[in-house]
Length: 315
Image (spheres, rainbow, N blue to C red):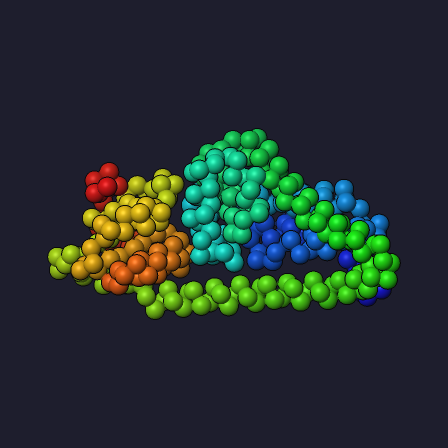
């Protein structure tokens, strides 16, 4: 038996607990391949399904509880920090906030199945003031569905192989190598995809000082605040003259966007992810003079540039 496989069988429950805990704390290492592999090995009866389930649930709930407390205390800054660590940072804030807006606590039942939402859902729940008991019940149910689906899928594959003892032995022999190759391939693909996206962001974004000069000169600039309403809670202000529109509303109202003016989009996402993505989307619609604001609302505020109350902006 390979040394790595022997180690995993000997310490599998601890490995699963630590791996799931690390992923849910924000380390970009997917747990699904590990849980599938562990589920497959339960067909050999060297690992038991109930103990694997308990280990994975413990790792998930401990990590989620930590992020819940941090989200309750520090709000949106914690979510943005997590999205910087996430492999799905280009969309995780927007997706999570939209899920909570539409589904409330029920979003926790599905969050683990949606890339980029599994980790940031917990601090969002704390940010909006959800009670810990309710959070723990919904988050625990969602984690249970996620872990069971992975383990049982792996067990099904293991039972199929078990009908052919030689095939099961061969699969077990190469299980670790296949897992490592799949994991490295997944991480490599996500890193390359993210780098390409961020490169396009850096090429397109507008510096805050340039926007400030444009406004000081009295130039007509169409500014759109893409932040979610939850992001207004710590500081209910925005840039002068900015329209507050969610990404979905911006697409619906695209006919209102002037084609003869500079269009500037901003958000509070890591690397201006949502603003950059929407800028690319509007360019596909024929709106060429559109750029994301580098640093978004946080950088504009840090530089001490003018801000106005949300209530006084044009809706």
